[in-house]
Length: 79
Ligand SMILES: [Zn+2]
Image (cartoon, rainbow, N blue to C red):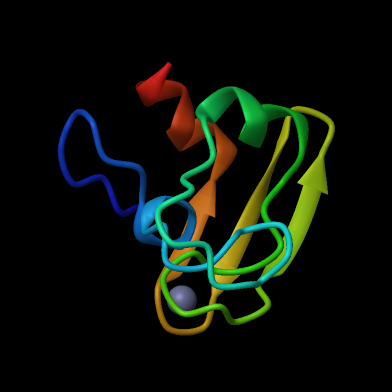
C-alpha cells in the first residue's frame, strides 16, 4: 500500500504526469476518486507504463511494475 498523506492519491493514479486512461502526457490532470470508482486506470500516472489491471465485482486493482499496486479500496480513504 502506498498511502502518503491524507490528501494525495498513490503515485500510479495521482502523480498527474500521464493520463491514467490514455497514457498521454497529461500535465496535471489527476482523476478524482469518483472517476476511478467508475473506470479503473490503465496507465501509470507517474511513468506512463501500461498497468496490469484486474477488475473485481467490488472494485479493481492496478499494478505498475515500477510504482506498485493501487487497490480501489485504498481510494475509499480519499472520498
Ligand atoms: Zn509507474
